[in-house]
Image (cartoon, rainbow, N blue to C red; front, side, top):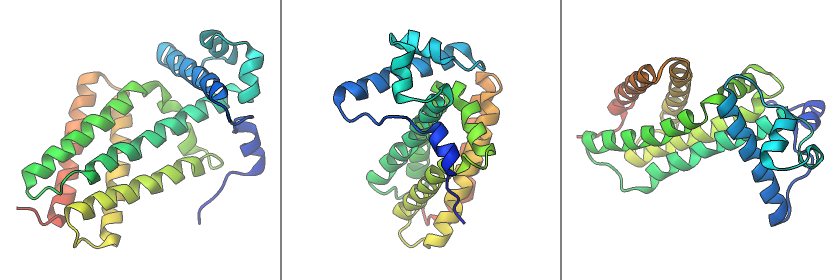
Length: 217
């Protein structure tokens, strides 16, 4: 059964004010951009609201108009990170259907290049993502995006093989998402060479998993 955020948690972490005008949207973007830069610079240390405000060129009061605390800012960053994945998967669905294993392998490689850059550029957000996954109150935030990503993986596989049963496609999509994410988290905690090797391993696992179901020459 899908769980939703409890009211207290939602109030504590949701942005205080949704930007309705272009000017307000730009202020929110400045806050989030500043927070992202600081998380990249500071590594495992969480930036303070004051530091975020200073980097954004705003007063702390201006930041608090939009976010109740620094956790809400980081959570909004995590949402943006999660929302970047559907677009790169959809790109693979929009291209002509691959008709050979080599063509499909090239499509998988393009997807890995796109998704890998999302992980590498936002590596310092991973503790936030892991915290969401491990928190029963926050997990519904990630679940929403997970279901969307699984559905897109399934749609991609059915784009390659229209005869593939939806139930099987979704099961494969679940494995693709979970294995890819877990292995990349491990890789990000190592050096870049190890990360790249793990990426290659995941790609090999993906191809071995889905190829028998795609009816490709």
